[in-house]
Image 1 (cartoon, rainbow, N blue to C red):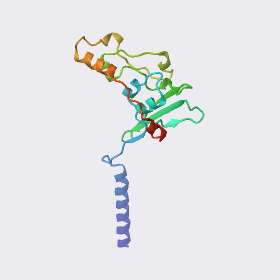
Image 2 (cartoon, rainbow, N blue to C red; image 1 turned 135 degrees about the vertical axis):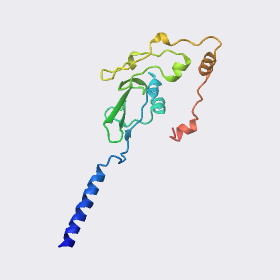
Image 3 (cartoon, helix red, strand yellow; image 1 turned 90 degrees about the vertical axis):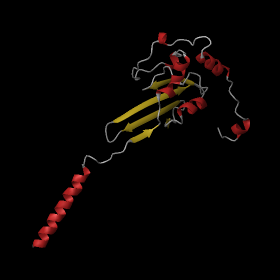
Image 4 (cartoon, rainbow, N blue to C red; image 1 turned 120 degrees about the vertical axis):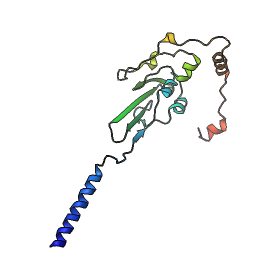
Length: 180
C-alpha cells in the first residue's frame, strides 16, 4: 500500500512538472514568416509601363498569379512574432494587354525611394499608380523639400553618370534557351 501511494504521488508530481513546463515563461517561441517580403523601397522603384520582367526583377516572383486574371499579380506577406498577433501586408500589381505595369493597390503606395531622395529627384506621380480605396494613408515628404543638386556638386556628377548609363542588351542565345 505504501509503494502504491508513493507511485501515485511520484506520477502526480511528474505530471504537474510537465504541465508547468508548458507555460513556463522562458519557453522560446519562433517567428513565423510567410509569403513575399515587400518593402517600401521595392514599391518605390515601380513605374508605369515597366514590363513583367522588370517588375519580377524588383519584386520577385508573385505569391499568387490568378488563373482567371493573368494580368494581376498578388504579393502577400505575414509575420507572427513570438506567438503574438499576426501582421499581414499585401500589394496587387495590374498589367495591361502588352504586359506593362498599369497600376497597383494594397497596403503600399508609391513615394520617393531612397535613391531618388539622395539624388534630389521629385517623385513621379501618375494617375495609373494612384492608391486604391483600400490602401492605408502614408505620410509623404512635401515636394518643396526635395531640392535639385547644386551645379558642380557630387550629387550632380552622380546624376549625370546615372543618366548616361546605357542598358546592355540581353544575348539572344540566352533568350532562346529560355534561361531568362
